[in-house]
Length: 146
Image (cartoon, rainbow, N blue to C red):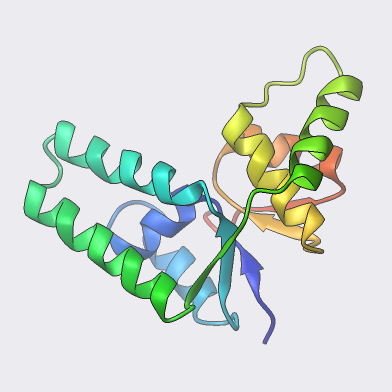
């Protein structure tokens, strides 16, 4: 078993029942540990709160989701990778050479650069823009959700 890199969308699918959760959980059961960029904590909180705003979850659900994330981090089930100058340099370099039609959000670029700088060859997500930009960082984008 080896570690896998997940973006925040996949982290949330580990904790809530929604489309793709079954497939992401099945994949997570096959890896040693899950790695993600440190800013995924904020993305996870935002996504969990979106569920509250949309009426799909309660504030108690939000608190449970955040407690589970903190527990997973504390037990290193989820490993947070720090933001470094090398990661930011890589983001800047990719943006400087990316085709003008590239749609890449800053947070996604940080995920991609973090995965690449930490030696991952794949990044797991169901975000079509992140997956499309993965090759710019030398990564293979993988979506286990059909």
